[in-house]
Length: 379
Image 1: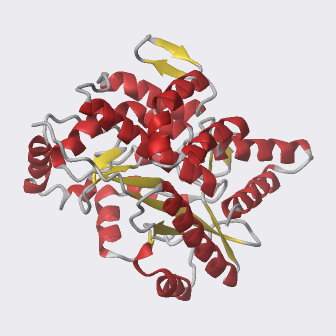
Image 2: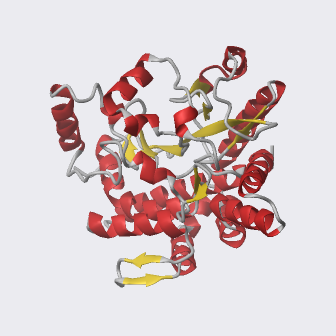
Image 3: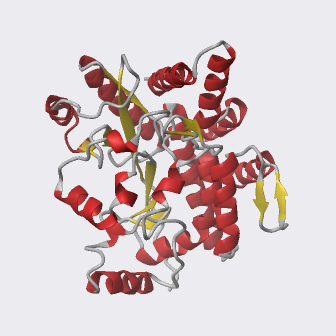
């Protein structure tokens, strides 16, 4: 049944950061317990541990608009940096570390993480990756599933604009988002399934639960999923953005797309549903190239420049950006195109260091320095 409940479109953002030693620029393998204790004293439930001890996760409060998202992220990042600096550490908002190895890391002693490592073995131990997850408040269950089905089309576009993981264990991978090649080794990842109703979704989840394979739907790690804990859709495909302004712009783009899709629905229209194999092809192109080589325009059946697709999308959501008061933040999407994603900037820094005579090791340390600088920009 079609819902008439207008979604609130509240926003919540989670970001994961890596902690590096100021002197060596390597990941801190065993940070002091006092560090997390101080984070929790300052930020309470808005900060948490992650699978590996070299990671930390923050989450904004429920934000009514994009301006509040910006304010929250600046506050949280600022506190993460200030406390880390007291221990000779720096946070970097990057989905992989340029040269540290996963084999050297220690995982956080927590029942959930222990279970994950036992179950997933090497696939879990390699999860030296960070992401950005954006929750958008959509209270009606049926509307949530309907919008999830339509939103899948746009997931590669969001990934292409967020790439921040070109390096892995000291090598240029040739991919702008290597993170997803690591994450996709887990089950129940990738593009979301499609369901005719929320009840159908729940029935499928129940099969896995009744079989004893998962405890609940938090063990479903699709690029986009209904949250198990909140009346939201949680978009998980994006790399963590190094610059806070880029994070805010992508959160704005996401909520504007949802508003546009709901607006179409109120006029008995909807976004065309395309075969998953075609969306997966664009997902791969976004992982490999970011926006450099374009994506398939699925309506035309040809690869077109990403800028052309973006122009069309920004025109479609212009009235939504105005209604949501985030036109400036949406304009920031064009700035990402102009200066490149974090992956582009990391690779450029590496090339400049090498051209200046730096060794591979020193050039990678230079990349970490750039990440430290960009993570702190705007705080």
